Image 1 (cartoon, rainbow, N blue to C red):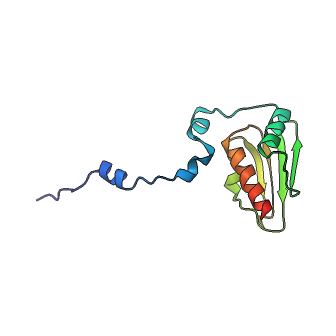
Image 2 (image 1 turned 180 degrees about the horizontal axis):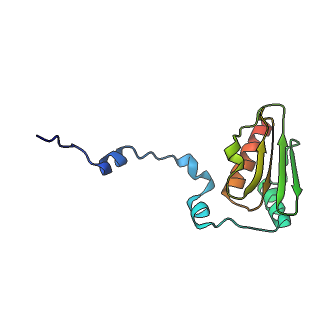
Image 3 (image 1 turned 60 degrees about the vertical axis):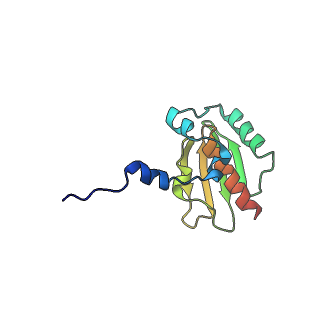
Length: 129
C-alpha cells in the first residue's frame, strides 16, 4: 500500500513563510534587479545623490571622489568593516576590493540604487560606533 502524504507543498510553504518586515526598510529591491531599473547617472549627479543620502555627514574614514566612470568610494578604519567581497559586487558596483584583513575597501559606484544606499548606511553606521 502506498503511503499518502498528509500535506501538500502549498501547505509547507504557507507554514514556512516568514515575514521579515525589517527587510522592507529600503523598499522593494526586486524591480531594480529584475527589470534593470538602476538609475545610471553621470558621475557628478551620482556623487550629489550620495551626498544628499548621507545628509552631507561624511565620516572621516570615507573618501568619495568623482571619477570618469562613476564615483570612487574608499573606506578604511581601525576595525574590520562589516563587509564581505560579495557586498562590493552588487548591481551598480564595479571593481570592488576588500582587503584581506577587512579594514579597507574600495569600489567604483556607477549607478544609484538600493544596494548603494544599503552600503552607505551600513558603512556610516559602522563608522559611528
